[in-house]
Length: 500
Image (cartoon, rainbow, N blue to C red; front, side, top):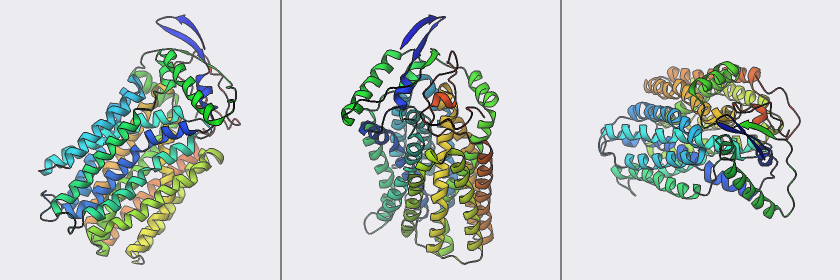
C-alpha cells in the first residue's frame, strides 16, 4: 500500500479489495455468515409469528382488544413502515459511521422493541412497538448486506448473499412451530402464549448480539474513510487465519485501486449517482423490490387468515402449513444460489421472478375453481415460493453490489424502503381487505396482483440486470473516491460492461 498527500485527505493505492476477493472459502467466512446472517432468522420469526397468532390475539381473553384484521393489516403495515423508515435512518449512518457500529446498534433496538411488545397491555402499545421492532430490523437490512458483500470473496458472493437472506425462512419455520406450541391453551393461557413468542425473539437477539462482537469492520469502508492502518491489520489477520486453516500459501492478489480518502459523501452526490449515473440500475432495483415486497408481505401476513377463513383450519394449527411453505422458501435460495454465480445474475434473477409469477397465476386459477384443499394450496405456495424466495433474495444482492461503495448501505436502504413502502405496506392492507370479504374472487384477485408484479419485475431484470457474477465490487461500480479507473483483479472471465 502506498500513500500520497492530496488536499484535505490522502490518496492511497491499495490491493486490499483484491486480497479479500482472492481468499478461498474458510472457517473465518463461516463466522461471518453466522454472526451476520442469523439476523434474518429474527425477521422471519417476527413476520411469521404475527401471521399465525392473529386468530388467537383477536379472541376474548388474549389480553388485548384487537381484531384479526388489525393484526394482519394495521400491525403488519406498521411493522413494515417501521422497517422502511429504519432502513433510511440507519442506512445513512451506516455509510457514514461504519458497518459494525450500526449492525450492533440496530440489533439492540430490535431486541428492546420486541421485548416490550411481549408486555403489551393496550392495543396502542402493541402497535407502537411493532413499528419500533421494524425500525430496528430495517437498519439491519442496510448494515448487514453491506458488510456481507464487502467481506465475502467475489466467487462466492451471490450464493452466500442469497443463502443468508434466505435464512429468513429458518426463522419462519421456527416461528410456525413455536406458534403451535405457545397457542396451545393446555400448555399456556391464552393471554400468555403469544407474549412468550416475542420474549423468545428477544432472547435469540441477545445471543446473536454476543456472537456479532467478533465480526470485524469492513476493510473496504475503513480504506475510504482514512483508516487504512486498521484495514491492513484486519485483512492481515484474516489472511493469517485462512492460511493456517488451509495449510498452504494463499494465491497472490492481482490488481490495485487508488482512492482519495474522504470522511463522508453528501446526499446530493448519492442522489446524482443513483438517479443519473446509474438510473437503469435504479429502475431495476425498484422493480425487484416492489414485486417481492408485495408478494411476500401480503402472503406471509395473510396466509394464516386464508386457512382459517376458507378451509376452517384452527388458529393453533396454521403453523404446520406455514412451516411447510417456509421450508420450501429456505431451500430455494440455498439450492439455486450457486447458479447465480455460475449461470449468471441476469438469467437467474429474471428466471426466478417470471417462473414464480407464472406459477402463482396457476395457483390463483386453481383456487378460484375450488380445486384446492388447505394441503394442496400449501403445496402450490411451496412450489411458487421456492423460486420466488431466490428471486427476492437476489433483490438485496443486486442493490448491494451494483452501486458504488460509498452509497452501498444507503442504496440498499432506499430501494428497500421505496419498494417495500409501495408493495410491503399496501400488500398487507390490500390483501387483508380482499381476503376479509370471504369471497373467493377477491382472494384470487390478490393472488393475481402479486403474480403480475413478479412477472413485470422479471421482464425488467431480463433487460437491465447487471452481469455481476464473480466480479469485484470495485469492478461492478467504481468507487466515488477512486482517483482513476480501478485496476482490480478479474476473479472470473469478464462477463460484460460495468455500467448499465
